[in-house]
Length: 439
Figure 1: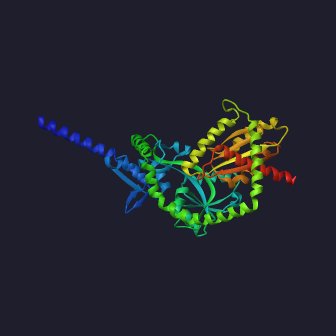
Figure 2 (figure 1 turned 90 degrees about the horizontal axis):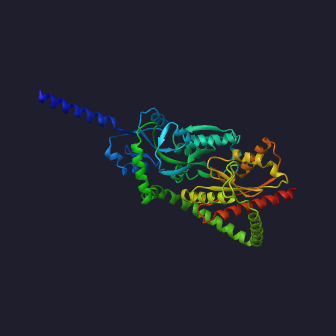
Figure 3 (figure 1 turned 90 degrees about the vertical axis):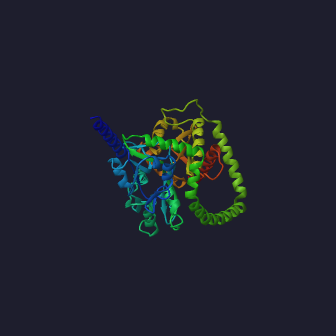
């Protein structure tokens, strides 16, 4: 009798062990997004796999890898067919269905690529654009185009490389890819160029189905925090992307150096005195604006417009972020020339809310000048910005005269928030002179 009890007890332990092993097997989805994640000799490789290895998740747990297309894997994750998916853009919409780890592995954003430079976004109207099916940048680009009243035809592809191939072959006039995908494929498809149109910065993370046990994500966060602190994550990133960047910089850098040298010499010879005079005039104008600053201790949250002191501090942080992430940043200055502007201020500032995208903000330089900090798109977008602003003013039945100037922050330069604002003001002064001459 006692032996039977022992056998039953051992059998129970065996069942518990088998149940534990089966229940805690981890199914991880991955797709082709080199070098963040890719397949090599039937095995998953890439930056996200390196993070899992550092977290000892692959060694301490039973793991099954599932390879597929990204859109299909997202659906399987939602249905609980896989437990974890790598390299997923964290967005508010996806947060409703998935749980993300806290620490971003890397920041990424969308970029429009084409065989030629695109000076005016409106010229894309009625054109065919290649996109990655299920991609977050596809949806963001689609929403952005719609907000500006641009009608486009989209061809959906399964990977970023297929999008770039479609542009390279002339199948489409342009394509929407991530900036990392463009960097990786730039040497392979040298004819395809990244335009100055960039948008939607997002954090790439690990994702699980909503309601699942998040202990794996907690482990990943602890590992990422350590890897960032000791510089290991930066080292891995440079190992993966360094070669592609070097090739790109060598080919583009030499060409730009020649062009910039010629332009610089011609500028020095032809416009030296003119530029000096313009500089002094704009500096004097900016100092005049600063003397009339409206300073408050806290931002006016009811207006959704920050004061100069607070806005300048946020801009400093955005500049640091732009340098860290190699992301373009645009400062737009609007000056209103209207004796009755105070009566129209509320309506005008309500229009600002419709102009601003996620991540953008606005603050005052003085009673009639506003500074917009745009994180979603580059300097070439200024004419679209002007047109959109005029259309919104008409819709609100606001008739007012304004001048506009913009400056894109170059993350490779050592520039301060004050200088960036000054250069945007200088551009606005040129716009003022030009329009008054036309009058």
